[in-house]
Image 1: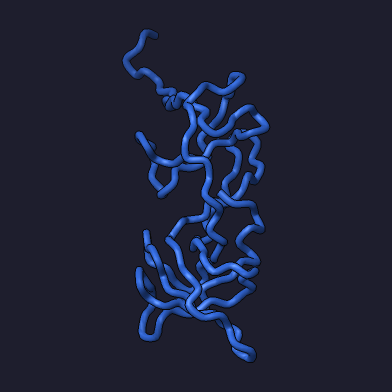
Image 2 (image 1 turned 180 degrees about the horizontal axis):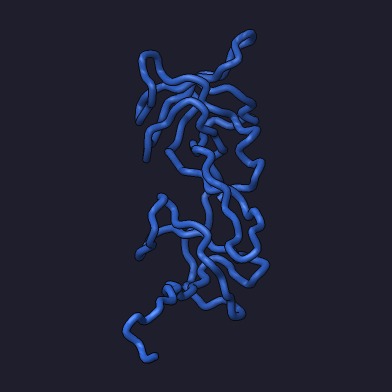
Length: 171
């Protein structure tokens, strides 16, 4: 999940390796934009807006993670594209996909725990565009740190059922 303008000014894939429409691991891509001194990037496809199902407020955008690229050659004077090599590929990459610097190694260990206070949240999105979530799937909810959630917070997930009329019920 990214903020509204997080990927709008990010470097973007301008062209794939010659003769390709989409690229995968080991292929070259040509990138336009300011790299900010970085050499290792994650690639994302800008996604759908995520809105709070209760208020309708825009919470952010779901960005689809595609893989990683590494700088092979920076743009030379008079040339406005950098050459990258695809390092890992979870899905095909193409023109318009955006780059974000690889984040520093994060915290790897945590203790699962209940939130410090009761949290009533709603599912906003299930990553991957599926209808139902299962164990180990990524979901986005409409609550966060300001609501008492932190790394390791564990929530229970319930499914709202439909209200249906009983056609054979008592009259």
